Length: 443
Image (cartoon, rainbow, N blue to C red; front, top):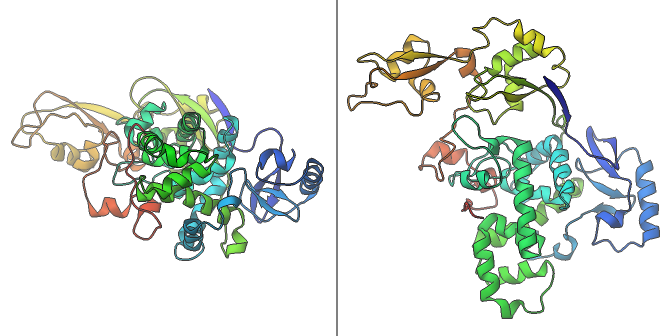
């Protein structure tokens, strides 16, 4: 069974080529997507018509443009453009960490259309995509020492709370599609709770409990303050943690630079936008077999299914697997024609007295660590040997080749380890303009 998914702009958008990247040119009134623009309805209509006729526009993959007036945002950035912390992060993104920022904008050309589409469908501003940039540089494999994972940096409990599957076999926090759906649900709820997009963003970072307590404690100070100014007024009290006080300024700065990169000397190279077909296969099917039946490389299938951690579909019920566009035709027939052993990701062996993970792994050309990826509940004796008579899953080497070496997905905080810290949340590393997130499962 197959299905086709081209992840990109929805109805009402026209795709045009720009500097090697696809950009979305809104055909509706600019004022309808840019509430902070002062153009009249007539001027907006003229600008939209001119923009629709334009064949090449400078900007990111979903830039809304009015010819001659520069970029337009659907979040309020212009009111805070001169804010001290906004300017600080604009300087960082266009200066000290420009290389990382350019890399993130390159990833945005792959995932940006997907994210904007999901935000738009939920009635959220599309420019909230820059929240994902601040969280992870748009890296699906990003993780922090606080065990926040993926483009949207969910902790395990938070991810499950927004409907994501997070277990030993599957971690949908690493799935750009499913994690974006979860983030949209969370942001929608937070905006409804606080009546402010920027307070919602602060709650996304620092937890809704802290934001709520701050609003109560400083209710008198905030009396008469309206709109997005409420976040900045609360931030001035220093009740929020430093990272959370800087969170919205970072988003605004990223939107300023990301939508007008040439102004800041930032260069953007494009990647192909995310697109895939899907096929349905049985549980415990190796991705290598899926790739073979699809006529593509196992690495290509793995890249589209980063949430499948063990190089196979999870044991149990059938699963949908993504394959490159155009490779799903005739898949079922080709898959059925594969040797049964090739369609099998793991085999079971029963432990005998004195055997260990290392001895079983060596006998099958694996390492003990690799064998452990498939046997998290293996019972070991004090001697280090395995308890006799238990069933051990032994993966094929083809399965292991596209498995991910990742910490236990259910951990809520990783043990301190230099290598883990080095691979942590991109915006939170020592070379980036933020401190490690202190995510809470409740947000």
